[in-house]
Length: 322
Image 1: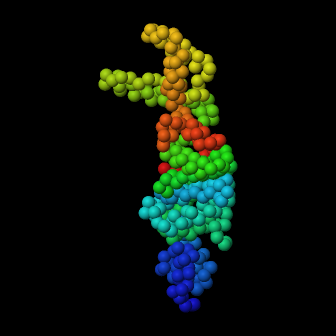
Image 2: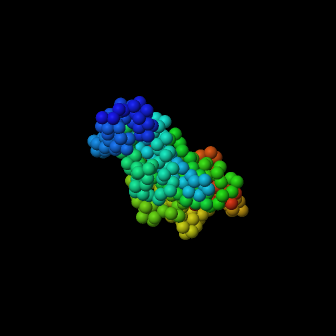
C-alpha cells in the first residue's frame, strides 16, 4: 500500500472540499491514486444523495451572473437543507461557480450536464458535495435573460431578480438595479395587464368575489361596514364602453350634488383616474409596470423608467428560495 502523505490529503481536500479524514480514507482505499480517490468520494456522495433524496431542500443561496457586455444574465438558487450550510462561505463560492457555468447555457437540464471542471459535470459536483456536506443539494431555480441591457439585484442571498432594458444608456445600470429591487420585493408575475389571459382575469374575479363575500358575512355579523365587491379588477376589463359608463355615472353624481356643469371638466378626469385605480387592483399586484415604485410611490414603474431617459423594461426574471 502506498504511503499517504499529508500533502496528498491536503491536495485532495483542496480539490473536493471534503474533510481531512474523509480524504485520507479515500486515498487509502484508492491506494494513493488521486483520481480514484475522487471517485471514491463521489460514490460516497451518491450513496448519501440517494438516502436524502426525499429530504426538503428549502434553504440555500440565490446568486446571479451577468456577462461583461451586460446583455445576458442568469440567476439560480443552489438549495440545501439547512440555513447553517447555506451561510458557509465555501457553499456560496460553489453557488457562484455554478452561476458562472450557467451563464453559457439555456436550461437547467443543459446546466446539469455541462462540465463544471475537467471531467466532472455540474450534476457530478452536486453529488460530490452532497457527500462532503452531508445534505441534499440541488439547483432549485434557474432563469436566464437576454436583452440590450441586463441588470440585477440579490436580496440577502434569498431572492434574486434580473431586468432587461430596451437599450444601454448612462442611466441603464441604475434603472435596472432599482427595477430589479422592485421585482425582488413585490413579486410581479408579468410586465403589463396587456399580458393577462381573459380566462385568468375571470378566474381571479370569481375567487376574489367569493373571498370578499365570505369576509362580508363576518363583518355583517359584527355590525361592521361591508367591503365593496368589485366588478372589475384589471385595466384590461375597462373598455371604452365601461369608461364611458363610468364617466356618465360621475356626471350624474356631480349633478345630484349641485356642482356647476362648467367645472365638471376639472373634476371628471381625476374621478376617472380614481375609478381606474379602484378597478385595476390585479394589475398593481401582478404587473410590474403598473406597480407603485417602492422608492417613490408617487410614480408607478413605467413612469419611473420613462423619467430616466428613452428606456423601457422589456423583460424580467425572479428566483426565490420560498
